Image (cartoon, rainbow, N blue to C red; front, top):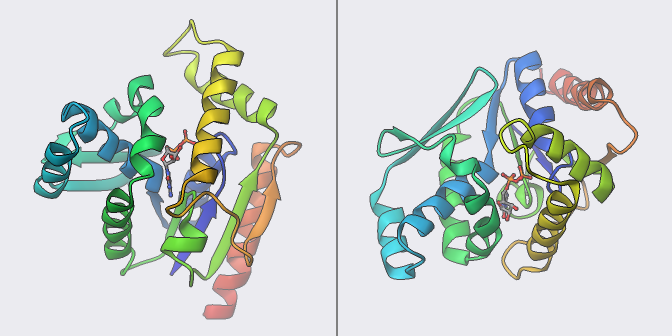
Length: 220
Ligand code: CDP
């Protein structure tokens, strides 16, 4: 069974999905982390597409969720922290727009969810990757609010970061993610929209957990 949450940067998808996975004892899948991993490989290939695609096919990418963290390994080496650097964040939307990268990441995800119950989050999961998902959510929030949340998350590791910089970065990414030809960021027609601008974290988690419990009850 697969439950998906899509939405723009900073809408709260990842923290919410992790809290739900922990509370309900289900698996968590972070599609953005896989695009970030592809981006790291692209940067290590010095943006040379031929080298990049060769490495993407040669390297073995594995991942698992543990202790509130989505861990990614490339050929057995952890890249969990490396994929969160600003260098990767700045290049990720460009790499995620490449159709070959999208089908690569989609295949990785479709293979893994064959067994068990998963909550997955991303941009196009309800529309392109898992159109038959049992439950779909689309999380949104005002740009200002999303930027504040992202700054809070990042400020410990990056004390010089300003609200304006964060706002600009997520606005640019949203635009690229929504306008790209290949599987853009988009709400699925049958997704439940959750605007989190005025919700507390607990409220948004409760809301989604309630919907999931209803569906699980129907299935049992
Ligand atoms: O956590 P944050 O909102 O910063 O982004 P992320 O979920 O880590 O995703 C990073 C980037 O990957 C996004 O800006 C998209 O360009 C891309 N992405 C995508 O194209 N499709 C997805 N299903 C997930 C992420």
